[in-house]
Length: 309
Length: 309
Image (cartoon, rainbow over all chains, first blue to last red; front, side, top):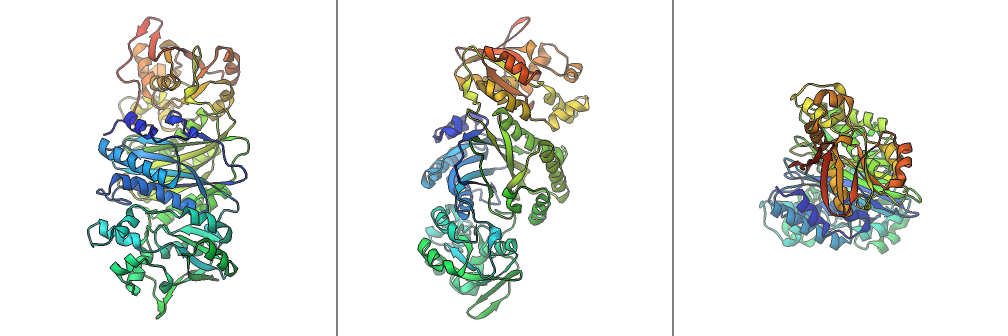
């Protein structure tokens, strides 16, 4: 077990924002953004559920930060800073975690503002991310009848990466990296936000997350599986047929952005995010319907992960 | 294991603030306070460490909220809302937790803004509390040479309450309640903040928390153990001698406020918090020294809890 004081000293070395009060106070204190909304998100991860005992601790730190920043990205928010909830483990594990957190914070240009360190029977971490965004901030509930469904980012890479990490299959380092070191689409989210009616990130699976936008907006959504963007590495490893595409669309952990936008926003979206792909449409009703060039596809029993993110 | 969707539905029933977006979005979105600082704190609790497996789930919820609000109180902050990180357990346990959380939120007039629900091998919860306060917000690092050390709230009740909860001793329901249902001193913190140079809450133990203010401020602190306020119930059960007072001052979980204030603030403090007691003084140097009416007291081996809050 690490010593709490030693761990906080290690964290202190990566803290620079005055609002963190050098990690010596009960709370972080910042001047809030003026004329902007405050966006707050929190994700927890537990060993054995969200990460594997063998995952490199630095990658766990990266992922904890990245999944929260992805939620900010989905709201078009610019990160202000993050608060860490940490369960102490061994000194080596903890040191590697802090090093990975420092690397990830630098990479995303985000500051650590504070947190809490406890002992616990199992590794379980929480992170709260604060961001600022111009109102109106995109809501999952905002899709309109007739809106197109878009996705920005490739789908299914992390699902294959997880199978590589578990040793079930062999594959490219880029796929493994998609699972362990996801890249939140912060810049894309900020650019897209003014043009969308609803936006979320794909964390639990494309189908489940698209279904959540539809449900929250009181609409039905139809998805063209052939339009879902797969990466060349994913196609090389897993193929491109209906089964491979269904696996990708239900695997989760992609941290792509999924959004609803009116037809007249097509040009704006192409300008903001040339890689974005239109994969479906919202209509009156409820539920998800799925098709590809060969016709309708029955919904798979599982549309993604529950309990996970 | 509870169903995630069912749990979130139960939470949704206690959500009212529009910023929570009916718990249907990736993040909470609020308009930040104008002309005030934003105060953010996060505390985690794990079963077996911060609460007992037999503790009533509703009391665990209360305590999780209360310990975070106590950090806001120590910054003189008014709560804006809270974000919950939750590990699902059995439907009964989860339902009792939500009921207790609802009761505590109502009691403290605080709103739930969002959170995350996961499965995990052990119960481990996090809560982020957001508050607003007028700058300058009291800092643990602000004590000045010559400042008096004050405490607002009785010390040691929760320590005895923990022993009652464990079945080690028998005692009054009020002491057990001090352990299970602590009352953060929000009103007192807001009134005191303009008059203090430093403030914190007593979570890990009076001595350790006083020592942290001294250390963060680059000063020494001397504490008169006889001036530490004990409750009548605590004295009736545990006595009033040096050993009982040392036990109280190192037990933790009090959620009293501890603060440093200049001599000239005596009247203002008496007006803001008539129950506040002056228990010591800051001076040049470092470390804690302890005395009572019978003379100097060697520091006990443990001045409080580490890893806990």
